[in-house]
Image 1 (cartoon, rainbow, N blue to C red):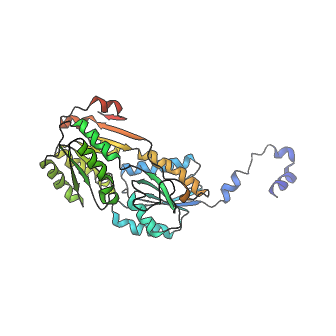
Image 2 (cartoon, helix red, strand yellow):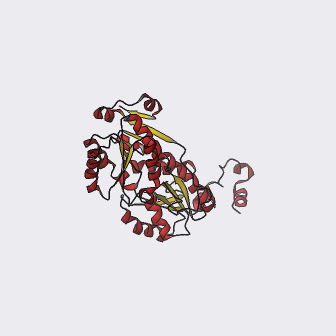
Length: 334
């Protein structure tokens, strides 16, 4: 009807000079897609802002522009698992088209509130063990997404730290059972097996709150641990500045799971690039909003890992970093 009206008023020759309108009309009338994002990252955390920006960049690259054709509501748990339940309830009550859960506590809370709304998760270590999906290849439920660090990487951390401290005989593994995957057991077997293979005694170090961190790290040093690994759980990530400071006070070489630990003063980090992963998550959001089911989209394992070395921290510890590690580093901080 609109085309016939224009032809009548303007004539065929005039119509040919008018810019095409058919792309603009759907944008003017289409309902915005609505997404709810629940993340454990505290508001204002620079690392958390990086992940949020990466997700928005990924969506924009696929044509999803916030405020234009998509509306995003954020809820932040501030690193406190107890907040996740009521934040998830609030998001689900708004009946968005899709939910995004960032980290295991967030996804757990969302799945407790809905089995119907599609969920895309990121920064999750063990989606099968936690019951988020039936299997990596066939999620089978209303959730799918991206794994950040597989259990086997715990063995790699032991091997890399041994290169830094060849004389190491005891190594600690710091985590919070309340927030770690499977209460910490997910990474534990690979950690213990790798340590014993290298004739190193593995020592587990559980902490329940920030006040316990200093005493626990001091105890590990007093027990003769000459190296420390930080498990990738939401407590450890949120409390990274405190933990790094306490480890520095005990002069312990340590390896961390993500880049932002090393840039904050940690000795070295090795793990997935979370910004890349959050950017990739936009692809699954796009496909689900266009009609695909999470149950049919395989969980994606990490494909890009990065090694970051802080030479300033190495110098403060009196450590000469091995050439083999420096040669493979993605970033060396001097």
